[in-house]
Length: 375
Image 1 (cartoon, rainbow, N blue to C red):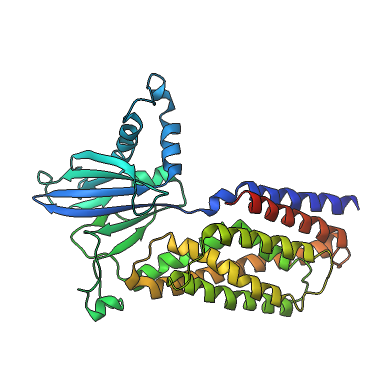
Image 2 (image 1 turned 30 degrees about the vertical axis):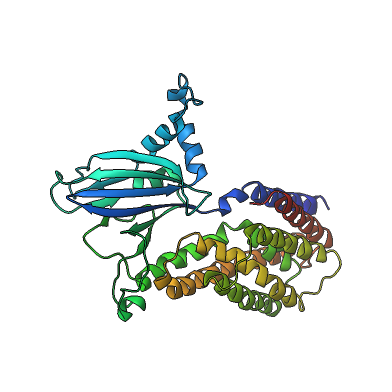
């Protein structure tokens, strides 16, 4: 009994640890648009999240002791300098183009983001010009991503059929990560199918850091001790969430994120409480099939946040969805054998009722936390 209490308490702490860390579920994505303006001039528009601003103030707290933040334009100037120091146009030898902060303010296209506009003069910098945003990525942390666009916004009516289906490179967007090479502005950005591996890894990351989805899967398989019910659970979840993921990513259906987050939290509470009333897992694929439609919209938010260009939507959607499935299967392959091991080590090969109840209560509490304090 004491051993069971210790094990359950450890699981309880782990679940609440995930709940308090749930903010990591939001990807750290910044963006930039680089517009050549002739004579070696470039306009660079950098979009960033509020968390980047908070980090900037934390990093420069010592330099702000004598600064009056209530004075007009002071905060904007500090933000502009923060961005200016972390993005650069440079040549292969590392010689940097001089830059000037033009403006800092709200991004009209994305009200939750801010935007800094820089002008960079590269006429005196010899050789090919590269874009280097990696100091900004380092400031954002290990999960940072940076979406780069080249040229003014516009439609894709001038693209060839080969460029549309991804068989030839075309101007557009590319997602870069820490460790990638600087972008050579003289070359076309990656074609859609070459972008696919990045979206695949993003799908895996979305599951591994998606603590709400992990809690849902954990609660659903808590009574599972055989492979076949787990196969049905995972398959049903895959089928349904793939449908809504596709509908949302293709912009056919649009549901406000606050509704999706609330519905996901309620699904977690439901499957956790269900463990108190039944031990049967053979029919739980119905739960995962129904709630998979809800979780699909949650998965779609991670894909949409990456700003997928329309010409890349098919390979991006396919590879992201496969990444989600790989991450999901990985979670199940860890959780189910671990539960069986706990059965053999502590409970004579049987799934312990109190252990399941404590774990389910922890998951339900996490779901309630996310319901009232959305991620």
